[in-house]
Each structure stands twice: as C-alpha cells, then as structure tokens.
Length: 165
Image (cartoon, rainbow, N blue to C red):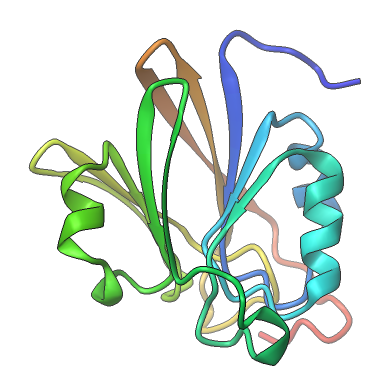
C-alpha cells in the first residue's frame, strides 16, 4: 500500500538506460503516476514501471527497434496541470510547448529546473548508470489543485555492476 501524502505524487525520471536502482524503486512505490523522459533502453523497464503506477513515457534516442511504436512527444494533463514531454528539448514542438504548464525532457543527464515565460522546464537528470560524472537524480512533483511543487532527489553514487562512471 502506498504511503499517502496530500495531493498527487508524480515520479519523474529519464535516461535510466536499462537500470532501475533500488532507491529509485522505493520512491516510485510511493507515486500515483510515473513520467519517463526516454532512453529506457529495455522493454522490461517499462513493465517494471507500469507495475508501480500508470506510466507516461516518450522514446529517447537510444530506444531502438523495441520502442518504435512509442511516441517521441506527448501532451496530457494531471489534476488540471498540462504537461508536454519530449526526450531532447531541441526537438520540442512549438505547439506542444505553447499549451503546457510543464515541459519535461531528458537527454543531457543533467538536472535542470527553470521557469521560462511562465512554463516550468524540467529535466530530472539521470537515475540510471552514471555517465559524464553527473549526479544521479530524479524528481517528485506533488500536485494539489492546479498548484504543484517539485522536489529534486539525488542518490549517492556507488559503483554498480555495469553502471560505468
């Protein structure tokens, strides 16, 4: 049973590259919805995520043949907050961005959170194998009414089997 807090809890991650860390799974178990910004790398990761909560996901540049039916961009609303997701923000469509309260993207493995012209642009970073010496990060958004709050989560880097540095 999920530990309930006020509002909807949204787990936001990207660039898992075939690795779902135990710490990330622990967070996702408490979420009502999961958003993945692409570069999943393995279909089994999708199945694991769907076992925790409803999943919204876009295809990343490393998601090959198995993911060819996956959308490259996605627009949807949660609790009245409109979202637009794309893996690489350079590929964001003006139409998708213009109607969004929140633009979610990945690709760079670098956490970024900024408001541009009233729209939150959020890259949760990467919580898969550590690359480019970036921190291991994801985000949790709490939505209450039309208001939302974002919490950055950073995990300690440990040498993991096949994780690389």
